[in-house]
Length: 162
Image (tube, rainbow, N blue to C red):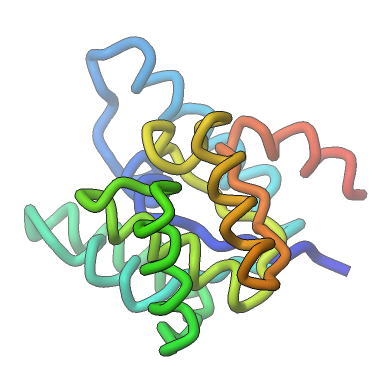
């Protein structure tokens, strides 16, 4: 059985962007392409209207590339339950107020029972210090936390799921 993975917007952006001159960003882009090409079929991929909204902003050509990729991704609803959990994440300081949309990505994935939230946002999401707080708020609210990780962390797992 495939694992469920919520794909946050940064993954789609890294996948479709022109190669960066920044060596770290370029490496992340290549890892994302490797994961997408070699491992994504091991997961059932999900997004949300929030991912579509974020991917739909900016340069017309870039928007088209991102939305084309998202065409095959199943969409999860942004429910009242998810909005309440997102607010709790912000109120508890697990996610800063300026990153409320990141809290909503977490909440949508948690409320829908996703196993993974895949992101390159290492400031507010895939960050060990933030994850401890996020997991705590989710458990206090009676939810099982989602595993927040980068595509790199799923490369090896993806290869082992055969």
